Length: 85
Image (tube, rainbow, N blue to C red):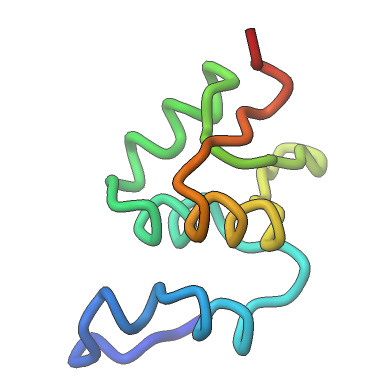
């Protein structure tokens, strides 16, 4: 997904924009930015099983479930990837 750099981050990662432009999954990097943290922090949370929304492992790749990301953005409640206590 290529996004123009001149567009404000808040507009790029709004729930309405994500709904309109993302498919069923998105990259960890984009999801981390939508949630307000860095790519490195996003991958660290994925490794620890603490990313705030559902993450699918597909081979060696990790993909964030778009519907889960939208629920987290709209509710503010994490849906930890099988790490609920």
